[in-house]
Amino acid sequence: MDDTPVMAEGLGRRYGGRLWALRDVSLAVPAGRFVAVMGATGSGKSTLLHCLAGLDRPTAGRVRLAGRDIARLREAALTRWRRDRVGFVFQSYNLLSALTVARNVLLPARLGGPRISAGDLAAMLDAVGLGGMGDRPVGDLSGGQRQRVAVARALVTRPAVVFADEPTGALDPTTGGQVLRLLRAAAVRDGVTVVMVSHDPVAAAHSDRLLLLRAGRLVADTPTPDAPAIADLLRGVTDQAPVPA
Ligand SMILES: Nc1ncnc2c1ncn2[C@@H]1O[C@H](COP(=O)(O)OP(=O)(O)OP(=O)(O)O)[C@@H](O)[C@H]1O
Image (cartoon, rainbow, N blue to C red; front, side):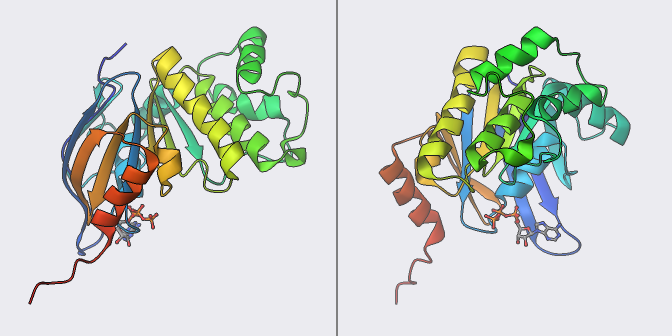
């Protein structure tokens, strides 16, 4: 296993001829870390996540994902690399409601990814608290249950890295806490590297490292403090400080 599955050097992304959405970001995330990416709206969080995950191509710099320099990979090879080594969890779940829990979880494998045995599937559903629910249509589940299906789908292929974009944005605090503990357990117990974008200091407090963006630049990379201290840090990069006279 690569011991630094997420690395970026001088990463930049510019859309069209406009300002840089991301500027000169360098970072290295060791295996088994749970990183939260925070910053004001428009500060470049999703752009960073997408560039690190190989969903978007940087304009400048280098990204290593699970031990491979992905900036120069062709599209088909990049898609395979992502499918086999990366899991995704989004705010909107991105599940197929008409399909059962089991079929949703097995979707990456059915699309040519790693094979998953019936035993592995059952163990994964147990681990996310959905034991015995494999045959239920996802459309019948609550938001929290759906997000646990998404977490199971992201983890069942044993990825090196899971990228999560506002995974608790649509959940109440209790249900959101359960999902965050699942992500944390994947990092601590299984050595999965988790990179999560969040607006919520309480959610980010589940991480062990905090990255703060301001106007596309990485302005802090620090061990995660508690939620009130995170809120203070966020205010520091969000508030427009008055210009002294
Ligand atoms: N596809 C795109 N085309 C043009 N500009 C874009 C595109 N995606 C993002 N941007 C711009 O890049 C900047 C950073 O956007 P990004 O979505 O990464 O911010 P964010 O921190 O994730 O914001 P939010 O918290 O609102 O989701 C913004 O100014 C945004 O308007």
